[in-house]
Image 1 (tube, rainbow, N blue to C red):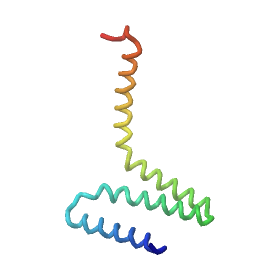
Image 2: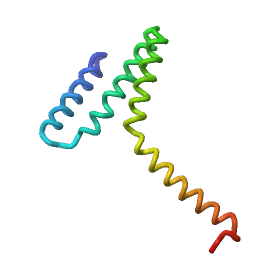
Image 3: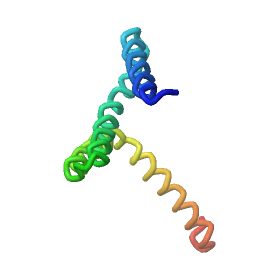
Image 4: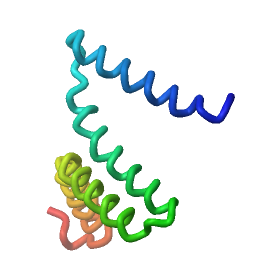
Length: 98
């Protein structure tokens, strides 16, 4: 592959996602994730080009945006962790069993 093929593949994929979205396939959630990820990548590119402060600020903003989009996962993780912790407490302490 030549050096510029990576960008071409990303653009083709991005265009395909847009077309699939227009055809009625439910890709709205992916587009919601795409913008924060692109902002993070923009910050990484700025960081690698020597503009460390600007890159860090942009990447942090993109990270907070992505965190907001994926916040529903934290509820699931906390619920599963609470269940597993409760089960482990029951296994360790035989007096706590009903």
